[in-house]
Every structure is written in C-alpha cells, then in structure tokens.
Length: 571
Ligand code: F6P
Image 1 (tube, rainbow, N blue to C red):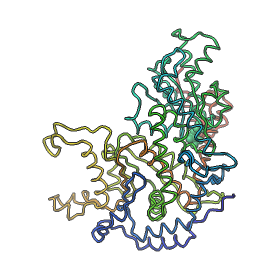
Image 2 (image 1 turned 30 degrees about the horizontal axis):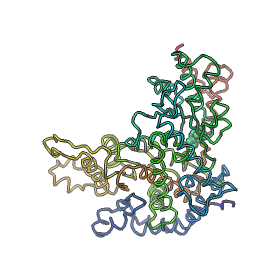
Image 3 (image 1 turned 180 degrees about the vertical axis):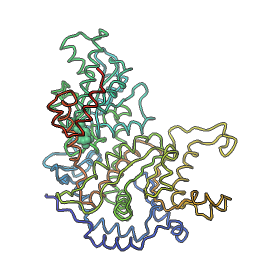
Image 4 (image 1 turned 30 degrees about the vertical axis):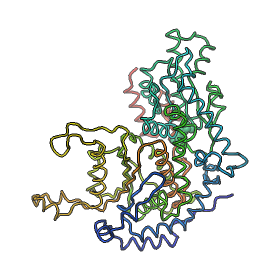
C-alpha cells in the first residue's frame, strides 16, 4: 500500500484552535493545582509498570484535548496501525518499520506475514539461535581457541549497534553473570580499541562485530584492528601457530557477527554459522531488541533478555490500544509538539535518577534526533513547522550540580523528563549520618529520591519574591533568589530497574518519537543526514595522508586545517 501524503498539521482545525488557545495561554502551575485538587490524579497515567505524572506540564485539560484532536487529524491512529502491520512507512528507503515485531508475544495469532515473510517465525528462529549461543558462552561450552572459557566479550559497533546494547548492559548491571563482562568499542579513534583491549587476555576474549550493514567504516576498521590484536597476541604467546589455517581457526572461535548482510560477514572471515541476523525493517536505532542485543543476552542470559522483550511488548500494546486521552507515549509526544511548536522550546532534558541509566540520554539522542531531525516530510516537501528538539541529560544529582541552574532560572524553556525507580539495586544505608539532616541509619536511596521529588516541585512552583523576603534575604539579592516556577516536567516512576522496565522505557520513547514524527509528517526511520559527512571523510582521507592533489581540491578552510594538522603531526 502506498503511504498517503502527510497531513500538514498547520492546516488542521486542531492546530488553528491550538494557536488561538496559545494566544491567551499563561502557565500557572500554582494556580492550577490550588484550584484543582484532582489535577495530579487526573493527569497521571500508567503504561505497563510505568507510573507517569504529566500534571506538572504547562497544559490545561483544554490543551490536552486539542492535542488529542490534532493526533486524530494527522491520522496518528492509522499511522500506528500501518507501522504495526508492516506497511512501508519508511518511505525514502521503501521499507516496513517492524521493530515491534521483534517483541510480539510468542504464538500470537494470526502470525505476522509481511511481503510473504513469516515475520514471527523468522524472529523466533533468530532469537533461539542467539539464545543458544548466549547459553554456550555463559556455560563455558563456547571456548576460545586454546580451550579457555570466555571472560570478556567486546562488542564492536557504532550508533544503534552500540548505544542500545551499552545502555541496556549498564542499566541491567545487577543481572550480569559474574566472571563475564562486556566492553563496547565504537569510536574510530584508535584510542578506543587500544584502551579497551590493552589489559585483555586474547585467549578469553570474544568479539561481537555488530553492524546492520556490515559496511560501516568505524566498525569494520575496529574489527580489523581487533582481529590483528587477537592474532598477533595469540601467535606471540605461542597459543596458535603462525599459519593461515591457525589464524582462521582463531577468528572462528573469537569472532561472531550480527548483521543483515551475512555475505559481507563471510567476506570478513566470520563463519555465517556464527552470525546472527536481522532484517532491513529494523532500524539501527530501534535494534537493541534484535540480535544487535547479543552482547546483552550473553551478559544477562536469554531468559532475562526475553523479559526485556516482554517489557517492550507491554508498552507496544498500550500504545496500540489505549485511547490517546490515556495513551502515555502519544501524550508525551503531543506535549513535545506543544512545547516545540507553540511554546518555542528547543531542547528536552531527560534526567534519570538511576545511576544505572547513565547512558540513557546518549541512547535517546540517537533515537530521537536521528529520527526526527529532518527538514522535509516523507513526500519530499518541506516541513511546515519546527521539528526534532535537542535531547540531552545526565543522571541524578550530577546534573543538579552542573546545568540545573539554567533549567531553574535561565531564560529558556527546557521541558524535562525525570525518571526514578522505587527499589534500588543496592539498598545502602548511611549508618553514621551527617550530624544534621541526614540521620544515622538513613536509606540513601530515599535521600536520593527526595531530590527527584524536590526538583520537579521546585521547577513547577518556584519561589516568589515574597517568599524569598520572608526568609530575611537582603532586598538587593531578592531578584537573584526568585524562582519563577512554571518550568514543565514529567515524572516517570517504576518499581525497579528490571529487564522488563528497561524494555518499557525504551519502547515508551520509541513511540514518543514516532508520535512526534507523524504530527510533523516526517519519515522518522531514515537518516540521510549522516551520509554527506561520511562520504567527505573518505574523500578527505588522502589529503590528510599527504596527497597534494587531494589537498588542493579542498575548500580554503579545510585546506588550511589539514595543512596545519600535517605540520603538527609528529612521525
Ligand atoms: O549513523 C548512521 C547509522 O547508519 C545509524 O543509523 C546506525 O545505527 C549506525 O550508522 C551504524 O550502522 P551499522 O549498524 O550498519 O554499522
């Protein structure tokens, strides 16, 4: 089926009404809560295990009703169905978008068949293959070439083939198997692979080369460097003979791959039997729940990996079936549209009060910005509104001591999502206390979460000049100590950082991103904007290495920079 032309959101009646609504709009969180005791309850929702409080956002019931109407007028319900059923909604690459098929319930009837492919059967088979491999590594049945069990797995990949796995690996640290760790090499800066392999034992190291295309410069370069490191080290210590056959055997035991391009995997020298596949309908930034998550499956085990998938599924089902009035990803996406297109926000902070989510913002940057950083719509016409915000963030109170000043008192509107879990992985108690507010025996997680609750409260309600004066503050510094309030936040609270909850969080933001993309009429699943720089890097490389003709062909600034680099470079 051909994808219909996008609806220009600015031509909808809901947009016109939102524009009128905005003209008289004044955020008044203090007043809204004072006059409406049910606001918190009415604007809090659940998706899976996630409790999501939207009440501290700059919206009234009317704003939300208009946004929900907008979702209908841009055909969000039809677009959701088109995605879940495998229509080719990635128009510019002519592909279906079926990451949700990776986590369908086993045995769902009828099976999902797209373009003649039994998607459910293929997904199940690949998951089983990956699980069997993970079990072998974890049990020690899979060994290196000298018969030693694997102690370190090194995932080599970049973008979606790195950010998802590393984020989930960190988030689920307490579930890792003892004696088996994973490292992640992504950057083509040779420092990355050099540092990550420096202290490794080649006999107990297994590399996973993760690349959807198996054509990514960084990943293939790092894979070659890793292969050379492995073979040289094994030969040097006499672990293998210095023959072609012995080297091939070592690569077979120490390298596996994840890719949609199994022919290229074989060309690299990795046995396709040791390769785990997926399909072009899984976008790189949507792929952590495919075989791209092999490193995670090895670390936490296949059963936990399936729990992760079940978490994704819970939020998929919520997104697909819940009316928009209570649909958390849809509402969060629509709020982002409100902030971006009406209130002029340019960035969005994501602030997990969970140290284990310390890579979550980095992961979300690719998910959201590679998806929605677009200036044309899926039919090639220019967008009619601002699109993708800049997503950023840091975990917990680290951010409070760095950039929260700007969020509290700066001139910019920065909508922020606060994420916390009720039960910590490490329930530590401060036996001593500080002799002041922190009592001996304090639960440190509760101290931590007091900050989570305090920050959204401070941002919402601020502190007036009268309140500052009442504290006895000298008049000349009263203005500096006033907090305007009305700074919007969403609070997301989960029971604990389980595999399921991590899956739920990722699916939540996938669908938030999708919702925004549909409103803006953009193809959230292509990434043409990364191509030009990649191509130019290859063109400039000879100039960097001293080719005079290539240098002469550059623009004056690039020529001057490369020349200066060459004069600075030693050796
Ligand atoms: O940066 C562009 C990109 O294509 C991402 O979308 C993708 O996640 C990344 O490169 C890595 O690609 P691959 O998995 O094919 O190596």
